[in-house]
Every structure is written in structure tokens, then in C-alpha cells.
Image 1: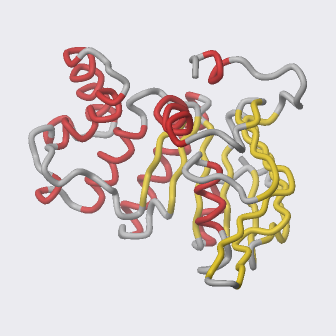
Image 2 (image 1 turned 90 degrees about the horizontal axis):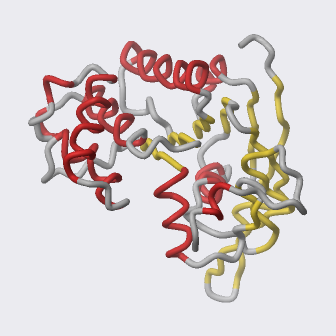
Length: 245
């Protein structure tokens, strides 16, 4: 797959949404029984939008996150990214898209414990075969951006939860992705540190035009959103437009 896939939207599809799901289902088979984790989901997310996907445990929001993040494909329906149908791509093609277009932030941080802070941030650049000296310079700049330049040689075990999440944010920005997808990004943090993380993401959205998608059960996070997608029992229950941002 060429990089043109990532850059050039199709002329035959609605070009406005960055991400678009049409009649998407995700069905899991358990023996002879089937369970629909997502049902008839229609959703679009525009470029430079801040969206919160809100739902309780078991609502299907993690399954939806996996589809939006190109970590999984639908059982039925169509997923468009940048105007291209990606519903039937293979794992290698999806991995290429993820590596270039999507930065992930997870509740559990998902740092590599055997790599120091700088090496963790460099990792996505290494996957893209960036020259090591350039990758190191970029990672150093990102650690400075999140206020951790003095922790470059520290291992993850030597960092607080808030510091580890800031490393995860720096790593998510390494390839300058269009989309930042955050799964419960404040779930393991105290309220003060959580507010810092969310303010940082909000500034990325406002100042750099990043598309931010947060998946959470925490209703307090909706104050940052331009739109809130309420999901329940595998279906989009409602979409709340917010004009206070």
C-alpha cells in the first residue's frame, strides 16, 4: 500500500468526515451462539474535532474504539478513513495506517518496561524506519513538550502514573498523527494529574488542530468535547452537540 492511500481521499465518497462508520456491526461467535457487541452504528468524526465516546462498562465503547483505531474490522458495514473504505484491509495495511495516522494513549500506559523514557518515545519512529539520530532528536523535543526532559533516562518503573501517561502522550505524538485516540486516559490518575493530561490534549486540539477521540465512562470528561457520542448496549443512543468550546 502506498502512502497515497493515507493522503488522498476518494472522489466517490463524502469527503468531509475524517472517520465515518456506516451501518457497522461487530459480531462475536461463542460456540453456536452469536453476540453483537456493536449494532447498526452510524457515526462520523470530522478533522480537528474533539469527540468523547461515553458509555458504561459493557456498552461496546471499547469495540468501537478498536474500529476507529484500525485495530479491528467490522463484521458488517463500512469504515471510511480519510474518504477511503478500509473495511476489508489486511493487518499489514492496517498497521501501516495506524503507524502513520493514529496515536494511541491507553489507561494502562502500555510503556515497554525494558526501555527508558526516551526509547519508549522513539519506538514509533523506529517502526517507521526514521533515522536514529532524527528519531532521538524528535523524541527529546517531545519529552520537553510534556515537561519530562529530565526523565529521559528513567525507566517506566521509576516514574509516577502521571509521568508515565505524559510519556505515553509524547509517544503518541511521535509520528505527528492526524488522530489521537485515548482510552480512559485519566483512569489511573489522581484528579489534578488527570486535569493536566486533559488540558494538554485540549490544547493539542485547539492549537495544532489534532483530532482527539476519548473513550470513557467518566461523565466529567465531556466538558472538553465538541460532541459526545453516548453508547449503550452496542448502539449509539444519542449524539450531543456542545457549543461551549
